[in-house]
Length: 370
Ligand SMILES: *Cc1c(COP(=O)(O)O)cnc(C)c1O
Image (cartoon, rainbow, N blue to C red; front, side, top):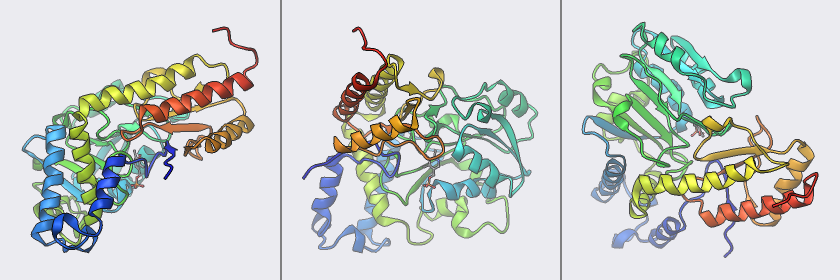
């Protein structure tokens, strides 16, 4: 068996030990004689699985008691609509547009009310997080139901290094691609949500953590489908209907793995060490350039390119020959992207860095004097 160096942006690498455990439990989950795939979601056996997953996540993030954890389907994308459907009570919310997913969320919200663009970095192709003072100023008017950000911009390789001040409006964040990469102070948010396939498990699960007072009045729209009604989903313990039973089981395994490997502080240290190995290389390279501005760089998605599409393609092809996979940049930006999520090891990153050095030695305009 040969496993590759997988830098996929999502669905992405999972810890090998988690995959092994899942394989070992596939036919007979802990002596019950069936697979988790075959188990009723109403069984006590399954209830234990989802309860354990939530408990592990609560320990990891130190989630305050007044927050609810919900596991839904539909991806992060369904919540682009779900959030306004639940929380656009006066009909106006603020959006910080820092990339493709933030823009999609903003456009989706505009179907339900007044989605105010508070700040954007589109003028420089989303290569940075914009200045946040305008967010504070606009939020201080006090007429926003919430302020929405996409905390880590998976496609562009940028991330918020500080949070905007939102006055009385709760802060909502799509944390899909930085979830469990580093500590997250849940008490600073009204709601965070993450598609699990980036860093927390398998595709098909979205984890939502929401402050319970925000759920009190129910959804903002009478037409909100019951599946999207977060108050109802919280009441039903994510079991309004059949949840993604297997996906939640995988999430639980990943949460436990993060706990067992040292928790979020340790994860953050390892992740910055991996990302900085690549950023340092980019800063000292004659042919590779990082595409995100330095003070906005992501902990998870390292985006870079050469000046030539042909060289980029050559680099990606050569990577494949060396077992380095999924480093082609998103079609919107081109170039390359190495996603260095939790399950990507330092050895994986070192293999990529070695190949980058090799490629540079071959293609740099003049030999480097080291
Ligand atoms: C991947 C991603 C999405 C979209 O997720 P789906 O689960 O495919 O809907 C949204 N936001 C961010 C930040 C992402 O990384």
